[in-house]
Amino acid sequence: MAPTPSGVRTAADVVTAELVAQLCEGVIGTGRTSSHTPFTGKKLAELPESTPEDVAFAFHRAREAQRAWAATPVRERAAVLLRFHDLVLRRQNEVLDLIQLETGKTRLHAHEEVQAVAVAARHYGRRAPAYLRPKRHMGAFPVLTKVAENLHPRGVVGQIAPWNYPLELSVGDALPAFVSGNAVVMKPDTETALTALWARRLLIEAGLPKNVWQVVIGEGHVIGPAVVQRGDYVSFTGSTRTGRGVAQIAAERLVGASLELGGKNAMIVLPDADLDKAAAGAVRGAFSSAGQLCISIERLYVHESVANAFVERFVARTKKLRLGSALAYGADMGSLVSQKQLDNVTRHVGEAVAEGAKVLAGGRARPDVGPLFHEPTILEGVESPMAVCTEETFGPVVSVYRYADVDEAVELANATSYGLNSSVWGRNGRQAREVAARLRSGTVNVNEGYAAAYGSVQAPMGGMGDSGIGRRHGREGILKFTEPQTVAHQRVLPMAPSFGMDDAKYAKFMSFSLKALKALRFR
Ligand code: NAD
Image 1 (cartoon, rainbow, N blue to C red):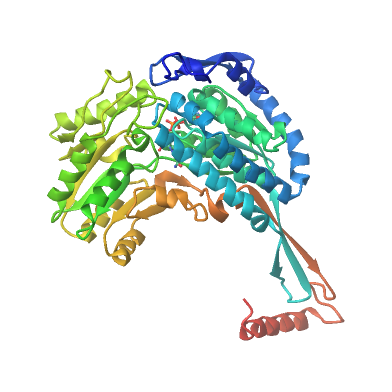
Image 2: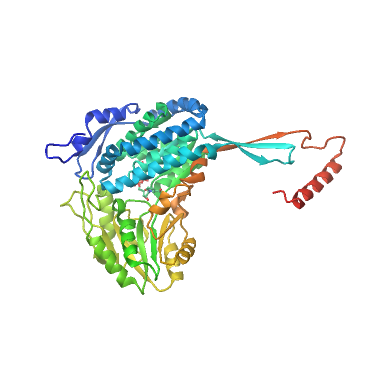
């Protein structure tokens, strides 16, 4: 990864044919495809392309490797995650380049992924043995029935990941699957496959047996269904529309699925909020990764008593954001990832303006910076049925609305079929947390936009309503990759009339026992 003579590293310096060959080693793909960098629109890498038959073979390989991996003591599996934690932090510059080149985001936004993956590796590396330990339960007859709950791996997990957080949503989500003894066949988005493949190579260096993680590459509608049709469990992150199709296949096959889907996330600024902090938080919440973040803020509700003062601060900060594409720290916002994303953003803004919305900041594409750049944009006067009011934009666009009282703000924030993430700002922490509890969303951040809840990896993260099913992080985030098994060992007395008791006496004895158990406060 040597820089050019000018000292500025380019895509060609980073993504060499040698690196691509190393990363793609072991990928089963008989066809060819390619990825591009949003910074210039030019080709980034030639990649193998997998067919549905290749996916079937990847599952076969993964299934064979999974048996030995599941038999490896959990402490050894957890140690792989802890070594991976150290390697990711040590080698972060390699992957920061790849994330930037594949997604077009700034280095600081790319670094959020390194942080999230390190936190997940540390948490599951340390806590997996406790999460996965067999548990004892009270049996049907106390003392006489000895009960253990064992947690078995599902087998081979089929994982499908989007392009927007290619490190975190590939390996970050796979770590709890691996540590609980599963193999994974993963389909990353083709445009961001190199980042997933880099993570795979690093995890193998940390000690993961190489066939336990298979990566397949190809068009979502071509090989995605093949992944869903073979997984013993499905872990999907992407749009609500694709997620519904994935859920249908999983339901038909009677396999479990976690679906991390879209959002239309709200932020509420309470009358007592620190407006400078709230404005800075709104910038982070709405424009990180150019708003291509499922938990990004797209609706901003501000109390009318502070609305002018807040908007003035928010607009001033937004106008100062610097767009940039250098493989270095410094820029505040990067590029959109694809023409499709840029078209969607342009459509949402254009339609809203045509129907009477006002642009307070931004509002235009910026081809002078790069083919897919768009200014961070603040709108006011947005109302239904403008698309930007209700549909997920998934770009750097946020609409400001004014409210008169907190009940109204809660009602407006909840007036969406999504329920992924929200944010509440107020100096009175207790009051802000009370408002938070009234919001129908899987995570709520008080005095932060999204990172506080996402970074708190011991607690579950995921969506309500159209934002999905299941959770990542914490106990839920690992137990979903396991099948609980109850082993009940009945001793001395059978679960039937015995010692010469007839049926009527047994029924009486059981009724008496049940009353006694309740009276003795057995649970
Ligand atoms: P998408 O649904 O188009 O694609 C996601 C993945 O699914 C890609 O790998 C794609 O190739 C694959 N895919 C496409 N068609 C498929 C099919 N028929 N069967 C199986 N797989 C298929 O979504 P996207 O545009 O890549 O990602 C953006 C969306 O993801 C946004 O809606 C965003 O909110 C959501 N998202 C959610 C979370 C979360 O944690 N809730 C995180 C990131 C992104």
